[in-house]
Length: 275
Length: 168
Image 1: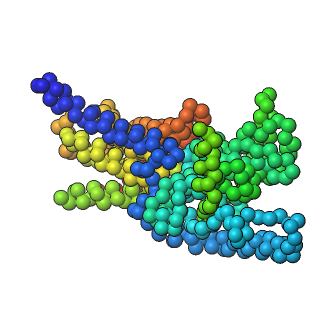
Image 2: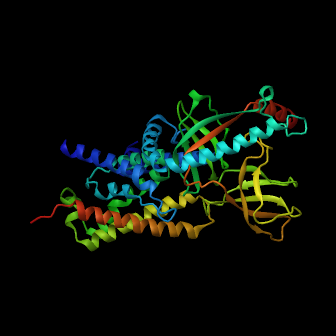
Image 3: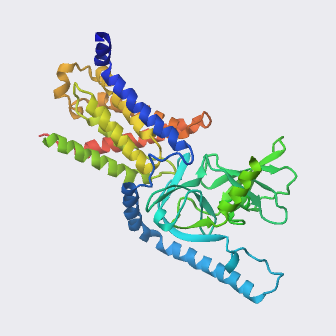
């Protein structure tokens, strides 16, 4: 007994140090797992409200460019609307978002904290449980995809950015050939992401558009992502493509959160077939 | 009493400076200074090491909360807080009797420079290794460490030059 007390006396600083280091390591490993990082994240009341007031302050700087973006999007949407009105026949492409067969709802939100220079990047947005946000919802804006929601508090949500080494998103080539692959990020440059697993026989050109594939329950089909900027064709059957993003990930403000109304239905079906 | 208020104000100042200003600099796209470790440099020397270890852990963890980095800042800050005394013994040749009278600004520039650069490099190296979290891209880890160290040290020495009162 004497020995144990003596031991604790002698190494008390070191033991305290070890204890705190283990706590820090625990938080670190927790943070790397999608959906498990419930302790240390920026979607809590204190960090959320501070970030929100800061972003209110810095919002005025890029008000003009954001307005231009908004009016561009308006024009695009108006054109789409007119197209549907002029050709009311069955030949027109029928979108799933018609009144009685609605598949997605969109919620507007504002980014109040944005990381893009690290290896595991996250964003914080100013909508939470009170606005019916749940985890694993898509976050997009008018130019392309941004990320997937992860941790939710009452008024704030943390979003795993596509610029995160854990991010994996189903994507395909736009056009007639519907080859699809997985979108990942190698943490080198925040303007480019990598598209993996595209088959070798797929016809590829630099400048081709990449969009979401619609094979997940998170992202709707056909949301733009970026343009192919480089094709690395090695000796494997797959080729890795560099994709230049349409979005400037360092300059984001307003986003839409996409909720898939059929998600539970689809997932329950898929779980049955797995058993 | 006065001293502890001073310390906690300094703590808050460093925390807010880091999360509001310095985390958003992104010089050349990715270089950020991590000036908050100055807290470890300037914390008064004491026989009892528990307060320093605890406060530096809390400071690191608070910065982790704001920058979504798990517990990386807490880990690296705590590490340099633990090994600080060893380097004070190595560079300044102090014995426990000298601790109450030790002040960083009274020491010669060369010694202070060695002391701060050692702790900064260790902190940044641990931080960027954990932020990278793989054995790929090790060159990026070293480059980040180098550039951020330079940035942090420039800010630290400018800050001490500006904020120390000149004695006449």
